[in-house]
Amino acid sequence: MANNRDQPERPRHEPEIIPPGNDWPDRDASWPPPYGHGQRRSSHRIYVGRIGPLGFALLMLIVALFGGIFLLVLIGAALIWLPLLLLFAVIGAIAGLIRRL
Image: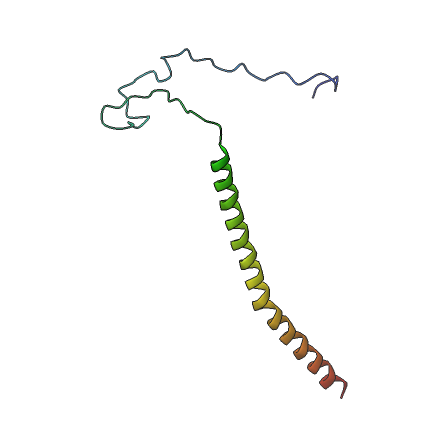
């Protein structure tokens, strides 16, 4: 434990820095598995564009659709469980009346 609580704990070991191009010592080894026939590892670019008004409207429509489906599922679950709970309450009330007799 550190003597001074204000100072952060020093790392126990230094991280290993592997220079670019030397990420796998033996490229002909069976591990890592090949990515495809003759395909080598490479970097890929991901382009992210701004969403327009039509895309935003479609996104909100999808969110509203999923929200409506979720609400219908909740209402359906309530419509199934409420009569069952009412039935259990009636059975409990009848059992309580029978025990008093």
